[in-house]
Length: 395
Image (cartoon, rainbow, N blue to C red; front, side, top):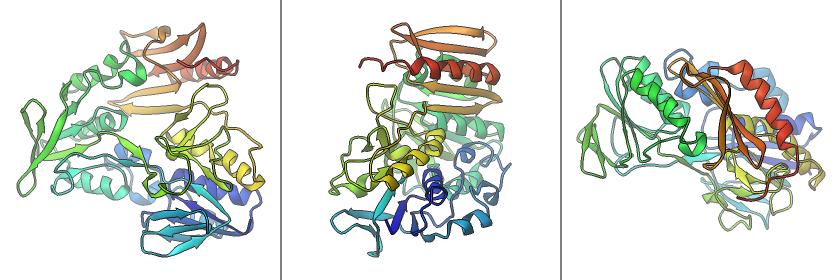
């Protein structure tokens, strides 16, 4: 293998490039990224960075020396447009191409949108550092901010905007956002915090479009109501960035389908991070994990298999995420479902300081903690032990 192209320059791509060198690849390494920026950390964008506590240079994933040690060619600012597997080429949007013997797919996910968003000054999506800088410039005390989307990123943005003195309204189509992730017993605790801190919560009716004159004026809901706004943030979800891979021969299904070692249906092509729909070694169905921990931990396994030319190692990580909102820390790990039995094993819901486990078939399959990081670590280790038993049957 003389040339490897890493397509994607965020955390999964950065870690893959590092692993290629650390595992002995000394050939040509090309890193392709749609953004003009060198790799940086995204989780702080909705929290510390949006609040003005960090500057762009503090987000960098690697130092100048670490980047120099990669001895990589950087093709930044132009996205990949097509994967030509017959010729072994990654074709870029400007018509140029990179010929490669091996490819690491790490293009992550793309934010979804609402009608009227792209054309409206004052309407934002939060995906890149440039997005965060633009939003940061619009947040001020007393500004009317509407956040459309009650997922983790949307709720983090609402928390940060409120901490900066903005008047915040949080809108979501679901009656109980986060219920699919945390369950109907625990999700209300997370949303109660928003109202405690003065955020207006409008759930159960989807937003249909962003209204604007010279800049945004509000958000229209499906029932005809209009929520006035000076600034709108749209966080209605994301989809894996796989459109450029159509026609490549890869198996695509809400991501790039891989085995338990991140190897795809094509030889010498692996996928990591948000884009990978992989087969966990301790679960009976494929999953796609769009969390930072997965993007950090999959590349060592994927690179080993890429260099070996076959799957010789499997990824045994358990999906894990954390969030910080209104000073509270939320942590989750595992594979929870709507019908799982939830048990509080430490602390109490009343104090909002607790650890809860999710059981199915007599086995712990997930754990969630609120403001209990030490106990979460204990129960997360127990969770991994539980999942090491034979895989659960399909639901």
